[in-house]
Amino acid sequence: MTIALATCSLLPDGSDDVQDLIGALAAEGAGAEPVIWDAGIDWTRYDLVVIRSTWDYTARRDEFTAWARSLPRVLNPAEVVRWNTDKRYLRELAGAGVPVVPTRWDPDDVPSDWPEYVIKPAVSIGAGDTARWGPGEEDAARAHLRSLREAGRTVMVQPYLPAVDTVGETALIFCDGEFSHACRKAQILTAGAGVQGHVRDDPARGQVTASTATDGELEVARRALAAVPHGDDLLYARVDMIPGPDGAPMLIELELTEPALYLHHAPGSAGRLAKAIISRLR
Image (cartoon, rainbow, N blue to C red; front, side):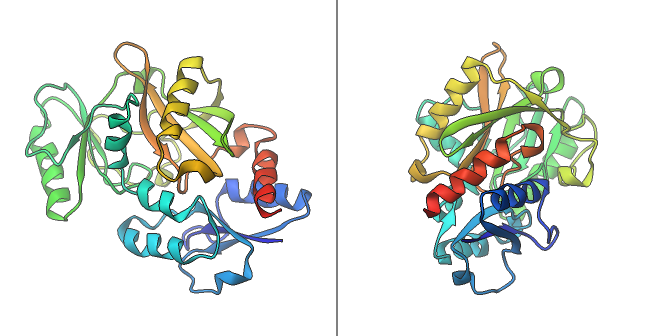
């Protein structure tokens, strides 16, 4: 068995997760290697492609989703990749009754009823082209909104929830449909910093620690996963949540394409993922 762990030219050897997974697959007798997704190779030489650290696709989403569709076998499935790489999927999940952070799509102006808010494009990863705005920053926020719209990008505006600063985000990781582990992510967006680059450009932002999922978080995560179109064959999933104003968990994002799975923070998790991959091939 030969498995390609798809990555990008920025990370030719893959992320930490990729390296952990290569070792875990080797322990199970399977060969795996990081492969740059747009390298133009013959993908039929691999028994399976697992999308991992393909973190440069956002400016070329159509090319990326076409590549996923062209593969003989890919996980997560290409239809899930197409659906999940545009955050407008959050509208579908909200319509299915999943508690999602309130979102305004392509508004004409910045909100006047939220003391702080976040503006970001619907196709983005790692807080790229994203900013947190507050009182007195309306002109800069409007310029941010306008720049995204003029570039033809779908814009999302969400309230900035105070729990991000006090509690942080919780990421629940699922492997082959089963809950694996949870991590806590510290604040990513800094008040007054304006539009910030990708979070990987600044290791001090969004630091991750091991955590424990609550029953409420698990319930929201399972409701979200149950609402995914073509979601019956998910190899992995990361469900990001934050407490809302009443303390109940609210979905921020559902990461099904190339999320960091924080395997370093959960002993045994790389082995679980390796076994799930091998079970698909057998």
